[in-house]
Length: 207
Length: 207
DNA sequence: TAGATTGTTAATCGATTAACAATC
DNA sequence: TAGATTGTTAATCGATTAACAATC
Image 1 (tube, rainbow over the protein chains, first blue to last red):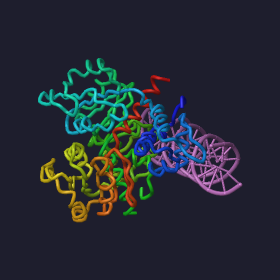
Image 2 (tube, helix red, strand yellow; image 1 turned 60 degrees about the vertical axis):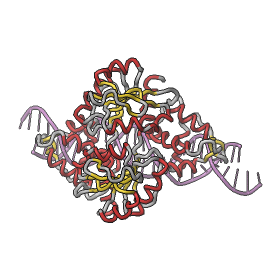
Image 3 (cartoon, rainbow over the protein chains, first blue to last red; image 1 turned 90 degrees about the vertical axis):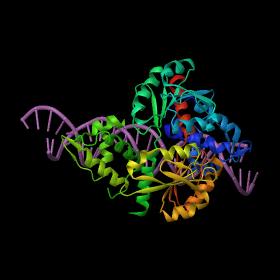
């Protein structure tokens, strides 16, 4: 690595990581094995791994544990990332309760809401705090990543406040398009995914 | 349309639809307006719309309501799609409670769980039913789309049962890779998204 | 007519993959 | 040595975008 890794490759590395986790400590794994479980072409896998410092052995494959480490290093998963979740509704709670990202160094640094009845309640290992304290919390806890899980109408404002407070990357779960300067935004949207599935359903049957 | 629409375009159409919803009934909208709100290039917008039956007017732009209709037609959002949600944990509940997809013709056809304590409880407009009845429910209610929101260990089995029962498209929210023959699978994964953000954080600062 | 914007072409860019020499 | 698999090249494919004639 040490060079720029193409976006398409970056998007696949977490998938490889997940597939490799299922075989931790099992010695080696060929690009074809990995390709099969990840659902991609084996040449793709080798090409992707060529952007890393990973070393395969011809005729054998890649060392599973070493490869996992190299992918983590390439993705920058080398330290803890506390995350702030804006919104403690159903979705915010599901995200905070879901511990699956802890494995990769992410943790719930804070979960915030405007509703006084929610503030103070426990969710997983966290206690809901007031949205009023967003700026102070982000600064004090050195939070760089924010998740917007508010209702759509408040998403833009929440994103702006997060960025103003120092957050540089945002994952937007609110069903709306938001835009802020100087921060990367990724959108995760159930409706969008369903619509894409609907198109393919039609294409396969209708014609 | 009537022709194949490229994947990259299909993925953007729902975004356009969302942007256009915010301007319903406001007359016309230029490719540049739409591009700005959607966060893409205006040539991209025009190219994408050229795969549809949509008609723009030179010097003026596109009729907002007509364009919305054409995008819906192209995506096949012309009838109701009941969805089955496998798993009534935090995530399944958040998904069932979130009504945002109803606008596009999707509805919760069923939400299932194995836990006897959850079966019978209300979530939004639905009542949790037994996973045992999956096959009967899918067949009887003509469900084509399934959402896997089970714990990771049960995701593969749930997907297989869904497909066996007649589901042809699956949205997988479980943090694992699943694979089934004869069905389209799309994965939505918080960890993956966070890892991509982490990479970009590192790339922007570290260097 | 002047200004604006579409629709489309063609250039460019980036991603995928087959193929194969290198080598364990 | 024989079999397997990497690492990389080069061909191909698909997506993006600048540019501009057509035209409202």
